[in-house]
Image (cartoon, rainbow, N blue to C red):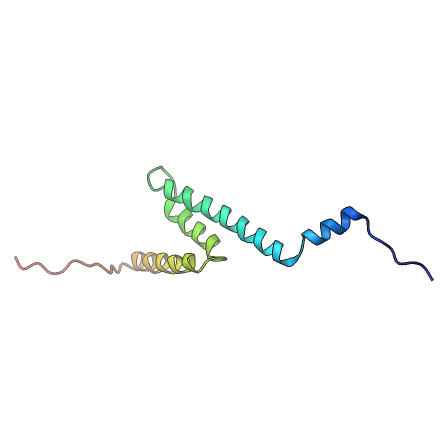
Length: 98
């Protein structure tokens, strides 16, 4: 019978660092940084030439994978975009009394 194989010390340390909790935290940080960067670029494109109204929802969609507030803002942005495309306006002007 063979003795059990022992792992090198560096490999044991590497495997102990990569547990499930750490992977979730790393994923959340990466999603936050990428989503915030895309969102800030979209906000900058409001005053610079570029497709801000496409980039901002993309940034919100990235952030919505991790944050509830981003999901709410994304739903609101979708609702506004749908109303604009269909020609409906939530703030339609009232009839004037002139």
